[in-house]
Length: 284
Image 1 (cartoon, rainbow, N blue to C red):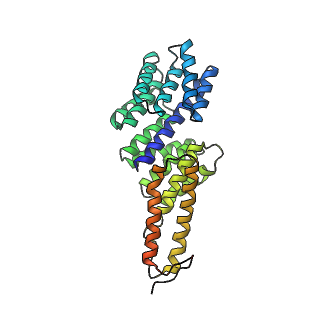
Image 2: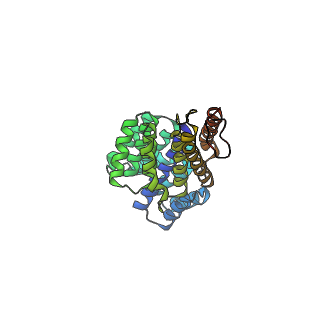
Image 3: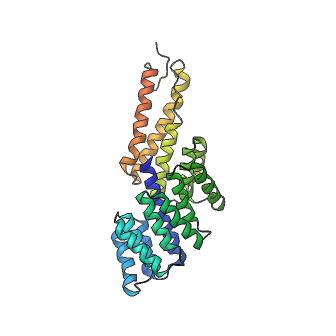
């Protein structure tokens, strides 16, 4: 599902930015820029990072932050230029390489993204945000096994990170392990540390999984035994979709799951036409 993966990529790269700035960030304006990006205030973020650059034109953290500000607002060429400047002034730092890797990932150039992330990891081998981005490359490339291996290693290191749980759950879905995906998401959805955009994507993914678990479960000869459970999962999926929308997940990313919910209701009507107002009776 490209739309969901694109949203996941945007989330993970933003998380990587925040980690980098928290780790290195001298200066009040760097903190202001980070906070503005966290609340998706692009103008405030750009102004804060630009103030740093007005005083220190070669500050790699401000260049990296400015690059992300451009990146999340869709100004990819300006983002790439900022990341290239970051790499030029700080070739031993992982920041420029990571930024360029995420630009390549957004452009769909997976081979180039993987090379940039490898360069970033070489300079910061233990950086979870970079390895998380590399796992996304594996997912986009259809290398589900490699993505799962990397996510499982990351979650052994930090089982409490909701963003890692989201990526891990998506990899499990792609491997057809839907029940395990639900388990992977449960604690993350209830986590007090999850940002709004992360929680929104978790609810959207959980809705997909809940609908997926209803596939092939409607038996027209056993409506009373099969329809209630299917309906329960569809109602839960509807609730998740509503929460995801409230938390800002784009409507177009939710539309495929909404269509699946509607299709499953139609399957119930066809297989069990006597089902009305919650009753489940075998068709005559």
